[in-house]
Length: 64
Image (cartoon, rainbow, N blue to C red; front, side):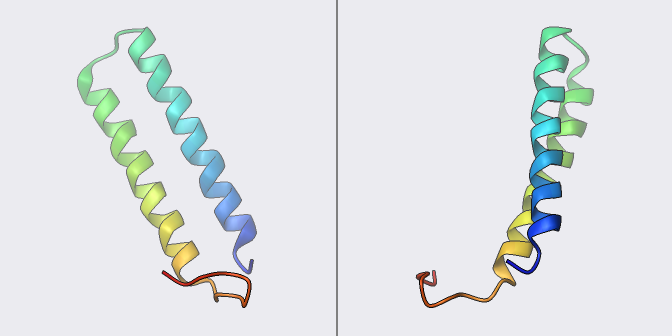
Protein backbone atom coordinates (compact mmCIF):
# COMPACT_ATOMS: atom_id res chain seq x y z
CA UNK A 1 0.00 0.00 0.00
CA UNK A 2 1.60 3.19 -1.19
CA UNK A 3 -0.09 5.44 1.36
CA UNK A 4 0.04 3.04 4.32
CA UNK A 5 1.64 5.55 6.72
CA UNK A 6 -0.93 8.26 5.90
CA UNK A 7 -3.79 5.76 6.20
CA UNK A 8 -2.55 4.53 9.57
CA UNK A 9 -2.22 8.10 10.78
CA UNK A 10 -5.81 8.85 9.70
CA UNK A 11 -7.03 5.71 11.48
CA UNK A 12 -5.23 6.73 14.67
CA UNK A 13 -6.76 10.21 14.43
CA UNK A 14 -10.25 8.76 13.99
CA UNK A 15 -9.70 6.47 16.99
CA UNK A 16 -8.64 9.52 18.99
CA UNK A 17 -11.76 11.39 17.88
CA UNK A 18 -13.94 8.48 19.02
CA UNK A 19 -12.29 8.52 22.45
CA UNK A 20 -12.82 12.26 22.61
CA UNK A 21 -16.51 11.83 21.74
CA UNK A 22 -16.88 9.27 24.52
CA UNK A 23 -15.24 11.70 26.98
CA UNK A 24 -17.53 14.52 25.83
CA UNK A 25 -20.58 12.35 26.52
CA UNK A 26 -19.28 11.23 29.92
CA UNK A 27 -18.61 14.82 30.99
CA UNK A 28 -21.87 16.03 29.48
CA UNK A 29 -20.14 18.76 27.53
CA UNK A 30 -22.13 21.01 25.18
CA UNK A 31 -23.66 19.47 22.07
CA UNK A 32 -21.74 21.94 19.89
CA UNK A 33 -18.45 20.46 21.12
CA UNK A 34 -19.68 16.97 20.26
CA UNK A 35 -20.78 18.05 16.79
CA UNK A 36 -17.42 19.75 16.10
CA UNK A 37 -15.46 16.60 16.94
CA UNK A 38 -17.94 14.45 15.02
CA UNK A 39 -17.54 16.64 11.93
CA UNK A 40 -13.76 16.41 12.30
CA UNK A 41 -13.95 12.62 12.47
CA UNK A 42 -16.19 12.50 9.42
CA UNK A 43 -13.72 14.66 7.50
CA UNK A 44 -10.86 12.35 8.44
CA UNK A 45 -12.91 9.35 7.39
CA UNK A 46 -13.53 10.94 3.98
CA UNK A 47 -9.79 11.63 3.66
CA UNK A 48 -9.07 7.99 4.47
CA UNK A 49 -11.58 6.83 1.87
CA UNK A 50 -9.82 9.09 -0.64
CA UNK A 51 -6.46 7.52 0.16
CA UNK A 52 -7.89 4.06 -0.29
CA UNK A 53 -9.62 4.95 -3.55
CA UNK A 54 -6.38 6.09 -5.21
CA UNK A 55 -4.58 2.87 -4.32
CA UNK A 56 -4.05 0.57 -7.28
CA UNK A 57 -6.03 -2.66 -7.21
CA UNK A 58 -3.88 -5.77 -7.12
CA UNK A 59 -4.69 -9.05 -8.81
CA UNK A 60 -5.71 -10.49 -5.42
CA UNK A 61 -8.41 -7.87 -4.88
CA UNK A 62 -11.81 -7.39 -6.40
CA UNK A 63 -12.57 -3.88 -7.61
CA UNK A 64 -15.84 -2.29 -6.50
